[in-house]
Figure 1 (cartoon, helix red, strand yellow):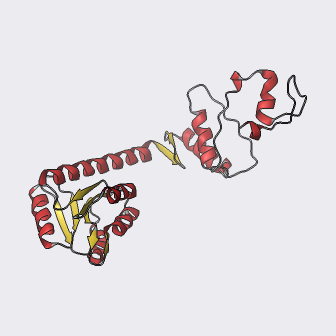
Figure 2 (cartoon, rainbow, N blue to C red):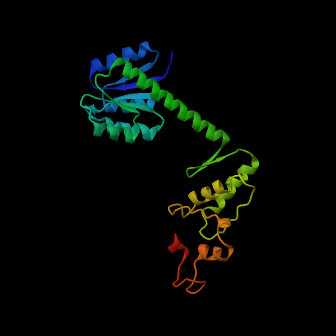
Figure 3 (tube, rainbow, N blue to C red):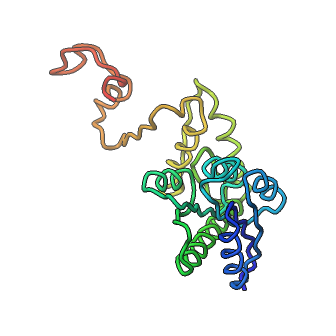
Length: 235
């Protein structure tokens, strides 16, 4: 028996009763709502694991509710239902965060399989989120693994130096320790995050051209250079 809590939102009584009987027999705890207003209050009170949501409701539409539910809990597994489904609507629902889009009345085996898959995907996301919280930090989308005091000091340093627009940072360490990850975290967490993160392998550049590649040059600085160039122009 699964025991997950499922909110079923549909204005058609027969559809609600059909889904309720089907899911209850599978061991789910089922909560029903016949309109958008009831669905909102029920969602807030019951915190369901999944929502089966009709696209058309007498006092609103399913797309609006979908956005509200996922804004409240992005990990909610949501299945959309519609008697007049089309590919465009289905694509829009999935883009907004719905797990799947089913036509009414949903076939028994399709509904059960899709719901089970949606709940499994939700469980995996929660597990990954938990592991991230246990094993490291996430700074503006960059994952840093490690919970030691040394790693904590690294993260504190990143948070301290990243907002600066003038600080120059030298990151040292043996190969494979994560210097590039730290650099990406500083960039992503900093004032220039909207600009590209540019990696340059300095050891691959000739020594006499390194300064030019990084900082630009004036005309005549070396053979065959006939114009002024900056590192921004080269990028």
